[in-house]
Length: 102
Image (cartoon, rainbow, N blue to C red):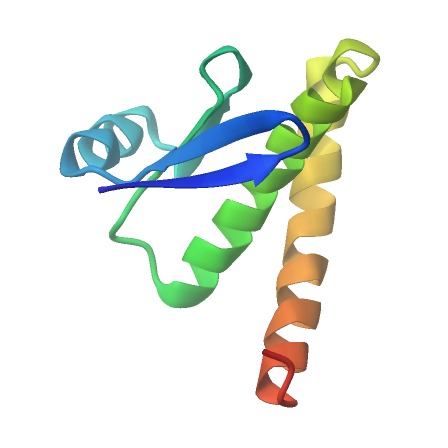
C-alpha cells in the first residue's frame, strides 16, 4: 500500500508494500528514502515504536532533500542527524498524543 503527503513543493510517497518489506529485510534495513524518486520505503512488519522511529528517521531525510540540505551535508553526517533526532521526535510525539494532542 502507498501513502502520499506533501512536503514543500513536492508530493512524496511512502511505499509500504510486501515487496518493499522483503527487499528491506534482505538488505538489513527498516526503511529507506530515495529523494530522486520522492519515495520513502518502509518495512510493514516493524513494531509500532520502531515503525514510528523509522518513519521519523526517513522523514528527516525527506526534509533534508526537500530543503536542499542534502546537498550541503555529507551522507554520513545526514545519517547521524536522522538517527540522533528521530527517537527524540518520536518520544515527544508519543507524549503529546498521549496527553491529548490530536
